[in-house]
Image 1 (cartoon, rainbow, N blue to C red):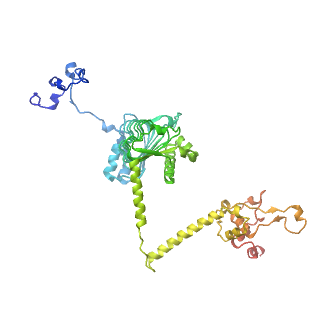
Image 2 (tube, rainbow, N blue to C red):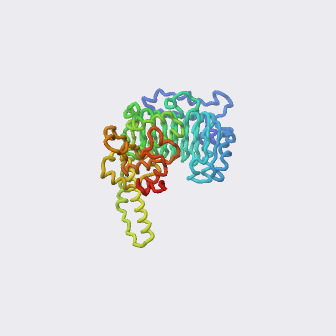
Image 3 (cartoon, rainbow, N blue to C red):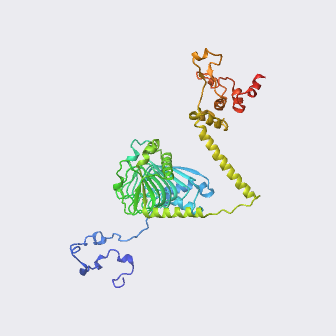
Length: 477
């Protein structure tokens, strides 16, 4: 600098006349490049123009929307009490939630607040980096749309974005959030009712997100978390993806050609736990955003299930299998020492085992009782079932109605027996278990009482002790 005659960097800015071209580095590709127009100093075009920073830039932090969120969430920040905030947003409001997250982290550390302690309902079009670095305990619910970098560095908060309630367009066919959403996010949940633009969940390492479509390069360089896409994707999906799992609803069955399978493999959903997890995410998506697409999928989920595709990195799969194997071996290697007799812990252990056994037996009895209609003609099975404890509380829904059948006239004229064929004692018990003692003449309608009785007390006695003289004694007295 001293040799060139400059004392500071600022004095050097714009003086391109001291630059020299090295002709020995020119080659066939660069010999025709002329940078003279680009390197023309600004002060030669307009005298007196500043060529470096000469005044401080006013970022107008005092009028940021975050200040409103901080002031209205004072109770949550100071005492941890839940609060609700209503506000509007425009696209010049950038990085909403970042300063609020700083206040939460400053007071409560990495764990933050309990989920949904601070819930902001926002309307409008959000600027760039909506929900940046959102801390645990903060929920930003946006009715509108957002620009690029939504959820950048998300750190445990929750983002919900859906179109205006008055919108008439189909949300699943329109972009609602911009490019590079969830860039470098480490934790939290997101629900986007609409399509995300390019590079959705790039470098995501822990967020669980639901979206109704993504552009090119979705889940690029993703290292963790879960992403559920309920619609189409762009090309080069999962490029460089080394961790996490993505689930895609391949409606048009053209997803395989859009995946970069260099580091991942694709398969269907067959694990019951994963199926339950995906269904739960769709239910949450419908709950938080009112998604019509999610409602249609849930309406016939079993039919949609074969169209779901699982995208899993090969190395990540190997690590998961190794961890599962280690856990299984550790569980197998466990050796619980025998408990001494007379020990209070042993008594507690025996009681616990007995309660589990009784519960299993009760469940088995319920399953058997549900098949009474099929086994009613089987005398041995019926005798076995009659010894079971019947459920009086839910009997009306559990047990099938069996009414007395009228005997044919040709048979009746030959004897002095009843007009109908009486139910046996076990059948009577099942029918009395169905009696709700409702106090209204429901059972005296066209169908009539299954055991030809109009006294609810008699039904109760038959259920308890059976149809005999003992049960009818109180009525005779």
